Length: 415
Image (cartoon, rainbow, N blue to C red; front, side, top):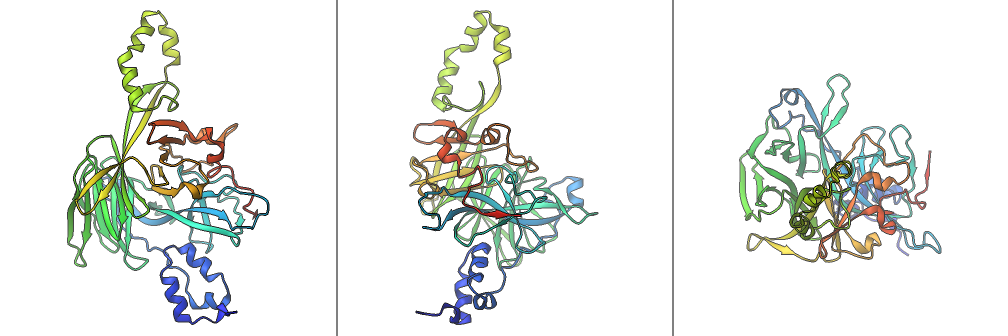
C-alpha cells in the first residue's frame, strides 16, 4: 500500500493549486503533518482600502474592507451514521480575522446567524466525517469604523459585489450600487471607482470574466487592462420583462432569472401565487363585489398588502449573444436572496422535485434564525415551481426545509 505521507512536495502543491476553495485547502492540509508542511495556508483577501462608490459624503469618508462568504452543502460521509439516511445541511460561512480558522455561520438565504452559533457563544464542528461541497460565494464590502477599526456595517450603499481574483489576494471589483444601481469598477490598490452606467441589477464572475446585467436584461462583459483602461462589451441583448434581474451560475451555464412582482391582497405568497391567477383576479372585480355587499369594514381589516412574485429563466447563448428561454433546470434548484444567488443539485439536497426557485428577500443581518413556534415561517422563504407557476412557503415542506433548519443532529458540536 502506498504511503500517502511520502508524496513529493511539488506534486502536493500542484494538487492544492487546483483546489478552488480555501476550505478544500484546509481539509487537504489536515490529512497529515507532511501535507500540512508542504502546502501553505490559503491567502486571505486583501482589503481594498477604498472609498465607497457613491456620492454620499459619509461614504466618501469611510474606508472599506472586503469579506468573502461561502455557501456550503455539508453531508455525512457514507456509512458514518449507521442505519440512517441523514439530510444534508446548507450553511453560509465567513472566516474572521482572529482567531485563525474561526468562522461565522449564517443562514444562506437570510443574513442571520445560525441559532446556537452566535459570535458570543462559539462552538466547534467536527468535519472529519463530513463531505463538503461549495455551492457559491458572496463578497461583502464593509465600512470600517475609524475609531474601533472594526467593520461594523455590511454592504453599506452596495447591492452586489463581484470580485475577480488575480492572485488569490488582489483583483478587480465590479459593484452594483444600492439605490443608484450604478455599475462601478476598480482594481485593488486604485484610489477611485470608475462609474460605467446606471440601472444595473446584478454582477457576477463567470468563466473568468466579470459580467453585469441591467434592468432590461442586457448582459455586458467588463474587462480592465493592466494600465487601468476599462472595456465594456455587450454580450446579450435585452429581454425586458420583469422588475428585477439576477445572474446565477448553474453547472456550466449562466442563467438570467427575471423576477416579476405585484402588490396584491391576502396574507402573502401562497397557493394562488402565479401570473395567470393574478390576471384572473384583476378581471373578476372582486374588490367591487366586496364593496357592493357592504362589507367595507371587514375588507379593510382583512386586507394585507404584500408582494406576489413569479419568475422566468433564460440561458446565456454565448455564440449567438442572446438569452434563450428555459423551461427545465436540468435537476438543479436555484436559490435567490438579496446578497447572493446560487444553484444546487436536487439529488444532493435530497429533494424529490427540481425545476424550482427557492427565494427570500427579507434580510436581517443582526438577527438569529429562530422563532417562537415555527422558525422557518419567520424566515419567509418560498419555493416557486417553474412549470406550474405555483408558489408555496418552504416551511410547508418539512423534508425539504431540513436542509436549512434545524441544525442537524449528525453535526457534533461542543463548547
